[in-house]
Image (cartoon, rainbow, N blue to C red):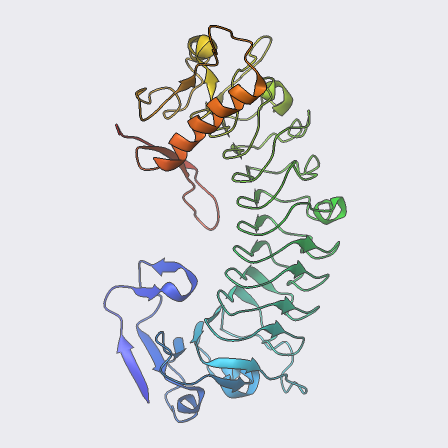
Length: 412
């Protein structure tokens, strides 16, 4: 059964995590199944097409997107959303209209059962966004996508490897969040890539040749992975945002960021960094109009600030087990460099700012005793996330800009 629904104010495209706050067109065509689409005659005015049900009322079936959808016939169609309708993509072996220019620009497959994406299964048309979120995809084979896709989103799937030539070669934005990625092959990323989000995976290491091929990156997000050290990013001189928070990084290599003149945010929060000379090691250039460095929730107990040119940098330092005997000096030295979050937090029994490392009147306590202090400190912070938190609000026009910061402090 086919229904045409008039949009009063907006379209909720929640299938791929976006809410449009204004109508893209006046009508949506909704079909329960691909078979219903064959009976629909008013294709001239079709602009947005939704096939399937959010609740999965119709049993999914094998589908040929090229033949069963027949999108070339819909001259005004710009958006297609297919939900819980496909359990297998059938290949197209003969192309009646290869590389045809289509009005279709936004294509979403959500909550289908695709498992493997093979060559000749997907449309060969230019797209602004191809979203394949939450389809149970375990593998994407080489040349599965037409190369002219501007942004691609493969988040919430089961991918373990990004194979060579498996992504659209001309994509500038790639998001593969919350998969099982553990490896990226040498030619796995599009060379013109500007925005890459691999948050929530199993990555421990990225081979140098992978990132050498994407030297134009402006945003790299690797949060919630398993890195023990920074990946080889020294050559990424166009970076604006680098986020590797929520990993297991303990040490930094000097000079990693020294050629990155466009940096606005380095997020190293929620790691295991303990080096007191961490700001010297960061060695960021002084040409940026502003740069925020987040070292929140690491293992810093002291901070060396001598002979350090801070330029216009701002630091987020809350949640570290600072030595109480050096805390006030650090606060004084960075009085104009702290973030709104770092130094205005209340200090009380439930929310510590520093740690006393004294054991029986001795500052040179055994490492085991110090480790107990630090563990207790971090446990308090971990168990009270609603009492105090400070977060980066990366408001996105497309992926990044502009950067805004919201900080919150609450008494426990």
